Amino acid sequence: MFMRNGLLFLALLTTPILHADESPKLGKPVSQALVKQWNSDIFPDGEGLPTGKGTATYGKKVYQQYCLSCHGIKGTGDSADELAGAKHGLTDNPPDKTIGTYWPYATTIFDFTRRSMPLNNPGSLNNSQLYAVTAYLLFLNGIITEKEIMNAETLPKVIMPNRNGFVSYTVNP
Amino acid sequence: MTSKNLLTPVAGGGLLDRRLFLKRGLTFSAAILTTNALAENQHFRPESSKKPGVPFSNYGLPSQYERETIRWTMGNSMADGNGVSWTPLQDLEGTITPNGLHFERHHNGVPEIDPKRHQLLIHGLVNKNLLFKVEDLLRYPMTSCLCFIECGGNSNAAWRSKPIQTKLGYFHGMASCSEWTGVPLRLLLDEVKLKGRAKWLVAEGADASLMNVSLPLDKAVDDCIIALYQNGERIRPENGYPLRLIAPGWEGVVNVKWLRRLHITNRPVMARNETSKYTELMPSGKARQFTFVMEAKSLITNPSFGHKLDKQGFYQISGLAWSGRGKIKKVEVSADGGKTWAEADLQTPILSKCFTRFRIPWQWNGEKVILKSRAIDETGYIQPERDALVKQRGTHGYFHYNAIVSWEINNDGSITHVYA
Image (tube, each protein chain N blue to C red):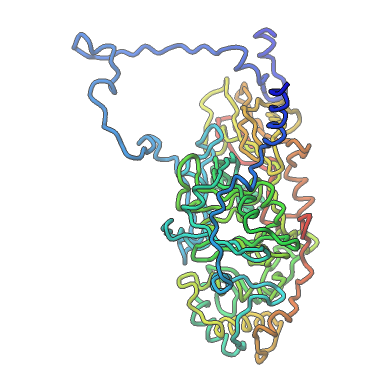
């Protein structure tokens, strides 16, 4: 009887799931300063955007120096993606997917350029260069004017043409 | 059942009962080897046994006769670390992909990472931001998951209006299967203590593109692993050494390699790789987003394009099936272009979200036929014909192509990829 109860007890305790109390808990608490240093995520509402600012006028120079060799004149594409200058829309054959016709959030341009570009020297652009080149790409796509200043305040407020073009497939978006 | 009954086709085009190999051992006539050896005790020795073999090796390599079984690589002309390499599925058998042949998708090359200096930060909507060293993680309880990883962009050439004529692996080979071993992510999430508002996590790699992507926390708690090992050895650099996030059954891009940071949030970050890419544009002009699950797919790997049938007669059709929703329940094969179907034999064990090998014997009569396979998973999902998939999604979605693949066997035994 004891054995049977003991086995039953064991069976209740032993699930295929590993429990937290089996964990050695070796994670080292870290300061907010370290988190801030590591965290590069930028959200559509502007969370994570750094200080700095730029306009398309300066952004054009940045683009020509760092981006043009792969993305082509005025973002029309070459060995890398077409970024601007769509000739037609998303329901045409073939569809023309650019920042202007497809990307839902302006913050993504800044974030992706900062984390991944240029391919041969990622991380080499400063924040003002990044705001400027983001402004240039938005200007090329007819979304902002050449003189509009992009910074942590203004960039999240830019409404992208395809903002409502996505349907989420997750149960918990 | 008698042999005679087993040899009666069970569907059009010469498909035979899948139990044939099991019930009736095939007999092969053994070739008698003869040699010109003069020595009295040489006549029974094959060439390989006439001198001592080469000594031990620290790390084994495939036979010199298998040097064509390689990944094909396709790098960007301006940045050779940006591109893909393909698993040569047409040359492999069983279900496990050798580590050196696992497909790759890198956004900016394979980083060189010293595990002694690599750490994983978990922060955001947690009670404690914690940093884990690799050596710490090696002390945690581990679990293994035998599962496939498939790039969301796998098979994208099949959206084209004309069927591509290339080896199977070079348009469906961004799919591979390994035993991944590591720490259940749930254990680490318990340790940082999630806040009630936490709903998503943003995972980031330590590569030159600092690739990041969001996934729902439910998945992380359910079955994600912080993997340290792949098929028993530490993960290869090109597959994420020293840490890779494994999200079983979900598109490759969320299985973040070189994992360095998990940001717990209440919303997705809307990274480039979940907005501009890895979303599927539909005919309506709207795009599907966060389509994480790789739906059921199957492929006949042998015979397939590039193979040639020497003569009519007996063949074994062999292929792979998988589903991101769970186990494969059934694979059916057609040898008459989809008019009739026969159930293939599934190699056991059949595991959830894992490659499943199917096989069926087949008698080829030398005539032109079309071979197809279709997978059905445990949720009842049936792999669609290409027409049905295109009707539903158009041809500009790029990602998540999983339609039935058709091979036309020509009279001369050569094989053409067709839409049928």
